[in-house]
Each structure stands twice: as structure tokens, then as C-alpha cells.
Amino acid sequence: MAFGISRMADSSHSVGNSPGLLRKFSRKVTNWRTKQNIKAGTHAFIEHNQRKWPQRKVSTGPVIMMGLFPSPVSILYSSYLTNFLADKFEGRIECFHFAGTPNPILKKVYESFGARLTLTMDDPALYAKD
Image (cartoon, rainbow, N blue to C red; front, side, top):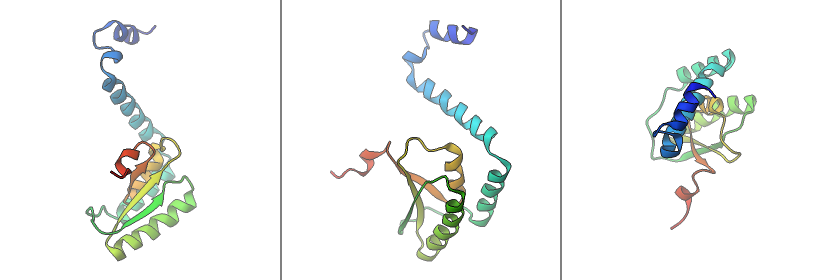
């Protein structure tokens, strides 16, 4: 066993006593991997989107809802169409994803043109009727 792992298991601050610690560590590793794995073309597309569509204020107007899908053609088309509609109707862009945990790189691409991930299988209580 590695020194860090055995020491963690023996200490009073083990993962079992603090489940948030494991989640926090997992998030940091995922964020680091995301930064390391973004290909040059994807990074250039993200920068293009951020220049073309600066972040708009959160609107209370209509919602332009779209799916979070990994198809490059769909992403390119959706980035232009949804921003056109959001500007025309003074709305906001939101997206949904129901197929497991979304890829962090894909999520970053969608966020680059203003689409916030707001509806996932992890959030059913937010949308339940009282």
C-alpha cells in the first residue's frame, strides 16, 4: 500500500468519517483531467464561442431548451441557432442530459456558448410537482 493511502485509512480523518472529502478530491481530479484532455480544436472552438457570444445576464424570459449531445455538427448548429433565438426573444439557453453523468469537456463546450446544464437525472426533485 502507498504511504498516503495507508496513512489515510489509519487516521481519524478517513474518507468514512468525511464523505465530502472524497467528493471534493474526485472533483479536483476530474477538473485536472478535463484541463489536460481538451484537444486543441476543442479548445479553439471554446475560445471562439466565448468571443462570439459573451456571457449574457441571466434572463427571466423564455428558455431555449436543448439536449447535451456529443455530435460536433449538432453542437456547431445549436450554438448558432440557440444564441440567435436567445437574442431575438431575450431568453436564456439551458440544456438537459439524461444518459448518466455528462462528460466534463462536453459540458464545458456547451457552457462556452451560454448553455447551462439545468436538467439531469440527478435533479428530479427540482421538477416534481407539489
